[in-house]
Length: 438
Image (cartoon, rainbow, N blue to C red; front, side):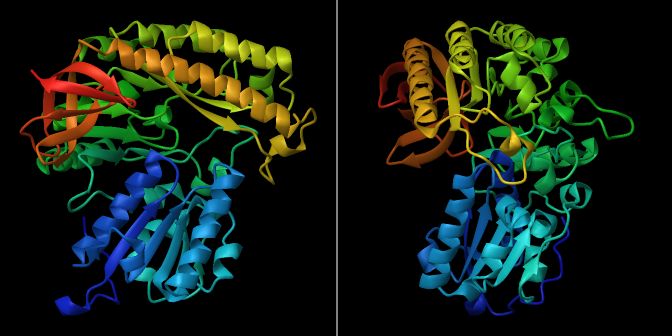
């Protein structure tokens, strides 16, 4: 990657900045934080783990919920007060969607997603750098470079979304779906493997649409095969994927390719077709269930996750019961539950049939409890099973990492971060697999 011209770049080591990075939200945001950090590292600047000890703090924000917006603004105010506004940079989806609360703080820089790839060269400017999101510019502007802090590396292959879900702000903050050219993905996968990453997580704002804008068109299974070939010593994991992209070709890869993790995250949101229609989701409950079951049958002990929105306008008791029935029928191993709240400017905010907050809280608790029971049962099912752990940290001879089925594990072993360790699970303690090397 060619490093942009940085007018603020120092020439003496003693003058280099210590930069701290804080990321909210999705894996795509984490990838982009890593890429921005790589730009700073290429210019010779050091990474600070504690924002309180940094010369510069870069906050990469999320706007998936109002709570995410509030948290971003809270941290920006806190650091502007404690560190000084000139030492704080805010970027990401919240800054893209509504920069005003951040610019009002007088921060060093407010850069939306439209300018996230230009943060180093914009640091000597003042005010705000936000424009309508142009995914094509950004997918070509942020690249993995230098050494990431993650043994499991995020590899962005796509950005933006062409869907129009009534509750979602994603298209307005990330633009339309745009794919990274396959040749570039291969090059980055090869580089990450050479730097010792044991797992590559393919990520995007709408991963399943990868390649539809490329000429010639490339499918998701073709992308997976290309990454596996370019990264022969790493395993590959898919991030969130809508059910319609669970194709026969993808199922075949899940059955036959040992380095493709037996794990899919398929957002459901609701098990009621009426609610799904009001959400303007591109699937209904029966096709979702068929694809989820087909994925779960692709490999013994398959890990299946999902997202759920509780209390969407129009969700009555019967609709919520249908969601619970699907949860009980399907072999979920974990799930993320979001309590619905209005997002100003979205079509969902104007719908009738809003659910009282107390009802949303009660339903959310019921759903979380059901998912937690399934997760505990899945953890228990791992006892006696041989697993593969990608090592993420080593402390006094004890390694910690993540299994191919997306479970945290530890073992006493001689290994290095980024390596893949075969081990047999002996016990479960506090949601953690205890394993012994094979």
